[in-house]
Length: 217
Length: 372
Image 1 (cartoon, each protein chain N blue to C red):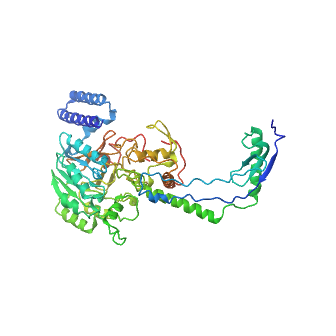
Image 2 (cartoon, rainbow over the protein chains, first blue to last red):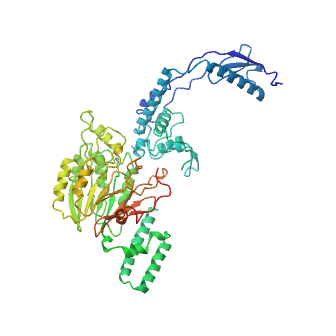
Image 3 (cartoon, chains in turn blue, yellow):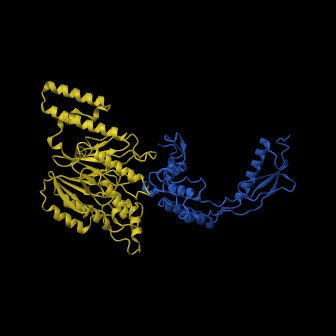
């Protein structure tokens, strides 16, 4: 039986895994113009390497990918009792805060440049898709910009909201697919389709600075 | 559903005519009777009392009675039938609706953008559909009809893009207002690329619409022989004023054209292109935008004329919403009443009195949820 007293928390590794800002690849978007009906896959999301303890104790990793603790007395595959879990989380956050204090900023100028360029690139892919019915798998020549010049009248800041016609709370993504399926007479895009991400990026970028009003009619 | 609305509007007109006739034989006793009758009509049709006001009828001057009417269909944006059936069906629906009008309009105005990408097949299909109209057709050219071959096919099918005619005391002028300055040669664009660029609203590449020096010279010459008190109605594809430049809801030389029209007592401009209810007044000129049969454009983020009665935001689940056609009543004293026949909503009338009073009287119904 675990108690707060008997919970022994041992730091296993402050292992530096490195800044893993991996640029998602969207190079396939252009090929989409040719293979209109194919889903455009994104590269799988990067994962932190898994840390193992030498004695088979359960290891808990922080989301920074660098801080981890092994919990003595708990084997891998077991479930932590709530109090122990809280103690482990507290320990992790303390260690993390200590590390943060030692550096003014984790992010370099290069990271910032990558953020800005990647954001702009995906928004501009979205802009292109907005004007290209073939790339979105449309079949009757109708493209997004024909009803939404400059992404107007899409109002991403009002989603999720109740759509009377669907009788449920819908997301912006639901509505993008609705337009692709109905006026454009195409097939809906998967949630992680690179084209969907690009459309969302373009539509929301057009409304930058507009206050969020989820649920607004 | 839309047939029901039309039947309702026609019945309204018949009742209104009866009502005018009855008013001529008016004495104190029959006034009460007619007033009761008017109230009865309104109640029977389930309309709000303000939609049929006795006061309006009594005040209506002889000059505000319709001299004649014409119908309009605009912005069909046809692709070839094999690619896109939806816009073809919408165009045919408008033709059927106009053919069902009784009495028939004196003529039907087609407001431009018959084709989507100016292809010969698209224009021919359009001509074929419009040929089903019982009333004669007057054509305006739109930029979608023009920029693939710079108007060759359109002119072959429909004649010159600029002309004028007189009808029942009104001088009508059809203007070619969608000329653009050459933005394609330097960029080495193909005709298809040029057409595609002009077809999109949200690009900074294309030039702005203009009537152009030649067009204005033609207009000045045409107007030289027209008496200043004769009502003038101008048909143009783009609005002959400056609404929103980024989307080319715009005519670059609008002021020059307005100046040519300034000496005339009553000038109305009926235009297509903007796919929305749009109303403006600049001095002596009343402007009315036509609905598209294909799709509604949203209102631009700035520059919307203040007399515009906004359409409700289109319902994305109803592909006919925000689209339709309409009827224009040319009034005896000049100017017009514009009737918007919206397919999925009640018809809306934008009356001369509304513009003349700068929006103070004859205000059309305002939608419950205004457009963003």
